[in-house]
Image 1 (cartoon, rainbow, N blue to C red):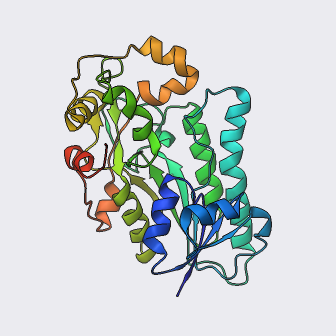
Image 2 (image 1 turned 90 degrees about the horizontal axis):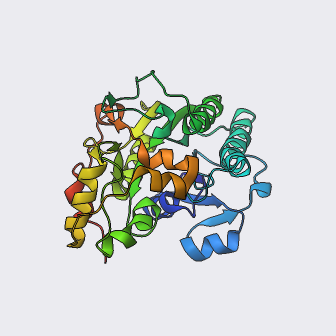
Length: 296
């Protein structure tokens, strides 16, 4: 049985990924609190601290999902630094361990986000897109990816969109006003929201592990991105609630500050390389993805 080393294992994607992989691989999770990690993930995984990670010789697969949540707090200068360092520092450590290993892993899968592209309009964006908009989300991801790409092994980069799940993530944060019948589009709702169902997220990572021809950046988004207005209407319908309100952009800016850029602006991202490699989405359509989630 091959061994997986996973950072960010107690996050939304990490929790689901552990469930997916633990039957086929020996999974070790790097966590600040190993006891808490085992409570969340079960005893069929091993948990260690970052300080315990002194070599990487025993792992064939390394998956790096660690990082401070980007939208949980306003972007003060201190919070921006925390967001960046929580991604860059662990990635630098893993790359150094890979490059000095006596038995380097077969693949290094490292997180990123569609924020790499910066705010865009309705232009379809594949992994070949290079007309980036310079802003904070772009800065985070560009350096994050540059560090990961220094690893001397097969490297896959996960440019992840909004992950739809019923046990955490962005959708859980937005559900309350929608349940109360107060949900709706933000601003004019024309900005695109590139999303992916959690099942496709973890299946896609497993696909990259198992397909040795895959390397480089991969957009982890549904092939059918939706406008913010379309998403709001379909979520209201899924919850059997009206969709009659809109949230003014100035109100979002007052509430979130600079981090409001994440929801006021968007990108129409297409998973061209993932589909070209042969991956098939279980939930390419938003209505089906929402229907598959328990939103009670």
